[in-house]
Image (cartoon, rainbow, N blue to C red; front, top):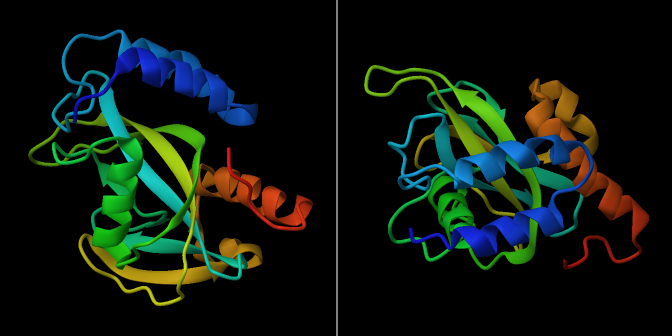
Length: 189
């Protein structure tokens, strides 16, 4: 993927707020590094990834997947690929590959996160600099596909039953706050 670093730097500075603002300096430092920071083999300290928090058509639930390698409930997402024209396209592709949803309504970047991805036989431990998009699905049908063992809609008030960590709870809290505060639900950036 060809990333316009300066445009992305400006975009990040405009959308990162609240508790995820603590990550901004690390994202900007990543963008100053040599090499392709969008490539999955950029390990020091890591690389960009893209994911999507998808709310159901009635905005009462969020789509979660049980990740095959991490054995945790997460939002769909993953590595950027050469075919991705931009970060949102990468998030959309990952959502389609993992749970089969397409035709999503986008609300843009709404969160960022940095988390450690554990070492595996073919890769060292490294950081994922995750760009998170908010979407709304036009349909309820989802299914577990590539890289996931399960996929389901989880009611916003039932997340505790899935033992999700703070990197999922924090952005879902943002989504829930937007849904509860506006009469029409989510709003475009």
